Image (cartoon, rainbow, N blue to C red):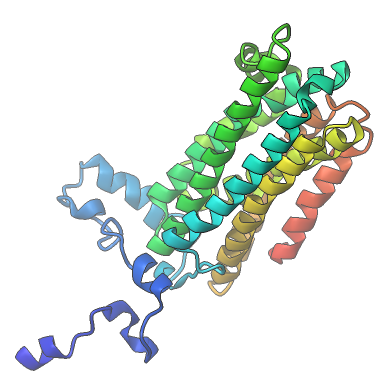
Length: 329
């Protein structure tokens, strides 16, 4: 018994690698307690009527998306908290610089009335969209079947909150520059009632009510987030046409975070592909959710001025991403 204890490695899960674990592996691998026992989420009593256990069994262990060992998944960026905060601190410095530069030239006061109306309708209410994206990332972080997946979802959660905060900041700046308009006061009304937002609202509300972790991941990360990020791309492109480089540059920076989300989400699909049946499951869920995504893009882009072709471009980008996953039937 003594020799057996002495032979154990500090990172027993990683001992078979024949090398010292990396910092990424040490701080992200095999950290969950909730998935060690199928009938005892969070190692609670295995009583059959304990709802927490039943919830995890149904929505995690019995998901149609399966793998023999989810803990073997690795973030392609190998991201850890220390590196993430340092990286995003630099990005925040960049955004601060952009805003300061445009404040110095009183950029907001020179925006065209038509574009101000567009920003009031399609940009500042995006903080509600960011809140929905953040909530879904937080749910995925809570229910994912491996701590390496939890880490990726956690950083995505941070990304969404970063942009919720930045949109709120820009809302206040636009309100200060144009107090006669509805900046800071009409966002909720527009989010809840404006036709341009109702496709996105329906999509996000249904994603947030999807509890199976696998379907939530596909619906959220592979469909909804891709779709709404492509509407942001079209908003930024339209901003350039209307003399608003600030919204365009901020959109470009936000899409850097989205690219990282796409990388780890794509890596999950690739990781899953070795398990029989997973490609068909993922493809089926994408097909199920895409009608809502197309409608979300079309209703939003229809409200963009000079928007001819914007929705088609956005949908084409979403479909190209899906083809890159290689899971089509």
